[in-house]
Image (tube, rainbow, N blue to C red; front, side):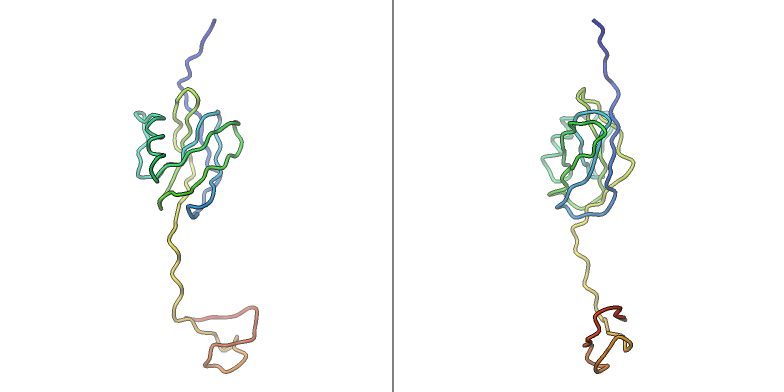
Length: 145
């Protein structure tokens, strides 16, 4: 019988490259079956990293994982519970080989934007008194400030 020793990692693809909250899913895929990991940029993944290391990190709030059951098919990986920051995808095939990082990255940002201050309704959009910022106009409003 002939045997082949698999020493080549799969390729990881991150289909979602946007800024998102940590409540949704990220779309990933791999060229081989195994596990995909969404890994925070503060974690070093190199030649010494093992799948056991990634699984340990997955117990914290900087790595999430999902099983890849079908090759080259989009799979949802939950971003739930991850801390803010930039993340890349790594995949581990069934032989334990870890891929290089995905080309794209996703940013988790749970900070709510600040509400604007000092806004004023432009006179051209104001249908009533020009000093009360109340209008009955319902589209194409112009604000300043």
